[in-house]
Image (cartoon, rainbow, N blue to C red; front, side, top):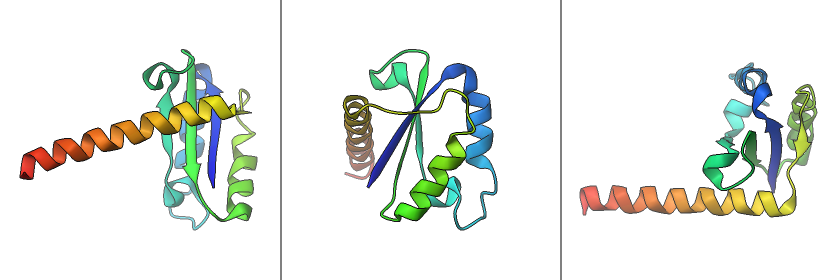
Length: 105
């Protein structure tokens, strides 16, 4: 399942610190993997950052979501914004794959 949250840019340092905390723990963002994108670069709201992660472990997702609530501007992204972010991430992945293919093609 996909999880997408939005934060104000003023909270980016606190968010990054939280994402990097306890990186060796089994239940950490670093272990799970995540994408953090600036809204402007993803065709979304300027001045916002979007965090996306994917897991089938609902318990882990809930635990990580609870940690994110410590950030003052924490909010769940709208379905439209989450879809736009996912689309942008897929486009970037395809572009990178194409570029990699042309190097070794």
